[in-house]
Image (cartoon, rainbow, N blue to C red; front, side, top):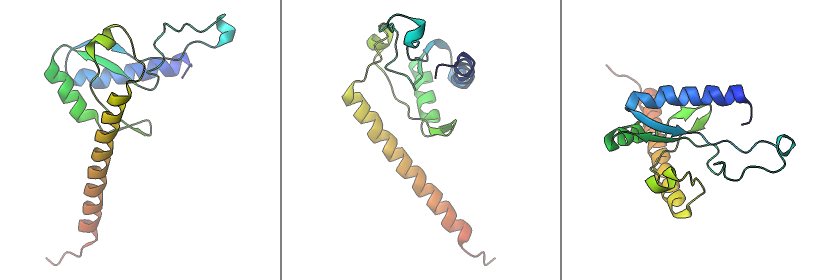
Length: 134
């Protein structure tokens, strides 16, 4: 997403949502580098590996845990949110490139959550379809 207005809206939405869970020390919403016509070469020091993700640093661990539990599986702009924890050292150094073991763990947890959500939805549909004999 390169449009500044859309990016600013996204950042504002994310700030409004995550501040419900506690004190935000910092938040990073990576963007891809500007197109080549704006620069000679992209700035590869800019964190762009994490494009499509939001990294939030909370003051307390419990706040981060509550946010992770509450936001995981929710939908934003047509996409399911997948949440997880990120290495503090890598965050501090803005090293947002993939760690494949972490990616695998997050993906597995997300799939389990999606399956549980689908089961709840199916159960609710069955209960709605059953005749009420009262």
